[in-house]
Image 1: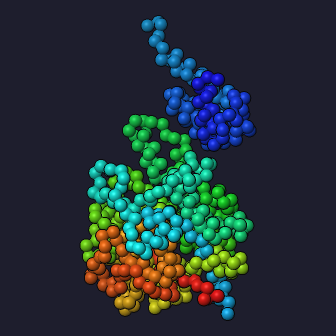
Image 2: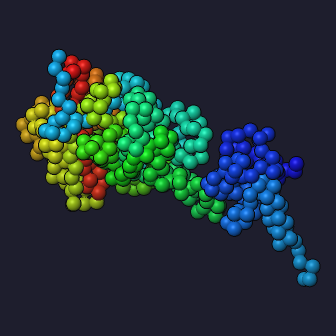
Image 3: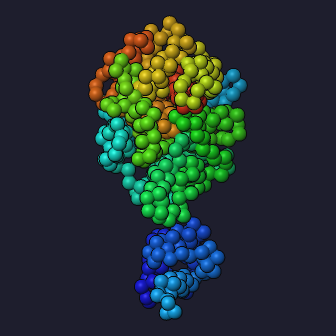
Amino acid sequence: MNEIAQECIALIAKQKSIPPESITLQSVLVEDLGLDSLDRVSIAFDLEEKYEIEIHENQLDQIKTVQDMVSGIEQALAQKNSAAAPSSTA
Amino acid sequence: MTQPPATQSGKPRVVITGLGCVTALGNNVAAFSENLFAGRSGIGDMTESHLGLHFTRAAVVRGFRPEDALLASQRQLADRSAAFAIAAARQAVTQSGLIAAYPVESLAVLFGCSAGGRLSEEHEAAKLYTRNARVHPLTVPRTMANAGTSLVAMEHGITGPSLTLSTACASSTHAVGLAFQMIRSGSIRAALAGGHEAPLGFAFLRAWDSLKVVSPTACRPFASDRDGMTLGEGAAIFAIETLESAQARGAEILAEIAGFGMSSDAHHITQPDPAGPAAAMLRALDDAHATPADVGYINAHGTATDTNDRVEAEAIHRVFGERVRTLPISSTKGLHGHAIGASGAIELLATVLALREKRLPANACENGPIEVDPALNLRHILLSNEPATPQLALSNSFAFGGMNAVLALRPWSTDAE
């Protein structure tokens, strides 16, 4: 499990006061872990702060599992890194 | 032994059966009572240094650990103000047994709060304005003024009306008064009512400093050399129900709420007019079917600003006339500070304890006994605690905006049963 996945699980565990061992990448945020809308925006905020990314509302709606969350962050980080890379056609 | 009548002029009598508090004088009623009657002030130096303030003292709640007081589900959502409400309400619920005794839909939560989640608001605003930081998504639920009321209703599953009243320094007196009226009218059967406040953020302190009403020394209500109020924080919450149902379920009755009076000055946004406070006191007495002669103690609003104390004294003279010569009066703000929206409830708690203990708390302040301002012509400001058994006591709250609220309390003793 990579560092981003570990971070996501730690944040969910803290938010819901549940042991991190009870969370897997396949856990469904609402049904399995009981995250409500405020939990989701709070966790998204913490992830945005940590990784200096922005998660839009429509992206948030599509995140159903812990794996979706990890993938969403990886995608946002890749976009951020490509936007920051120097242009080759200068 | 005769059973006391359950009604007064055809209306149900209303009593207090549970108390709870988090204050600068203590974080439970026993500690509050001990410090109140010991004249031990909860005012002290603020731990954080605040640039540009002309005062350094405040009545800060100490030893309050939100992580102990709050459920896991409440920790992220509760600002310090709401956390005080949750902790104080739980004490009142435990003492009264109110929740188990009534259907949850017949219960209400009525709290006064003036500044909402001010600390959370200032914290987020400071981050935003100084470094364009993102605002935390829980800022809205943490800062809304009704958060404390809502979180308490949620914790206890109360599904009747829940309301937050915001009338500045009279907020919680209005809240208890409204609870009293709603119970008496039969629209609810019982309530948790009171107030909570935790406003002592830097911007709040600077704003009050600019008004030039905060004491640079010590809060000395009714003193010749008074020079302003001392700001504070805290909560006091009461369990309230009818006498009839309290007796039927064997609850311990702590005091009776006999009357409630309200008025508006309709005069000036900050300058009080004695006609308003006088009208509120008279209406409270009228509501209690009492006369000025029946009153044996006033817990005054007594902020220690020049204007409040002068105007309150004038209002008391208008209502009580010659009776002022012997009428015991104290402000307890020199001990617990001015907790704005929570102050009325904290002073109501002091009044309940005075009736219970048969002892009137002194008009104490941290610098020892005051010299009473002779210009106020208040002859019986309590310079020390006095044993007394008043048959009726008033608790006064007069707010900026000219909003006045007065509660009349009767003692309750098992002798009456």
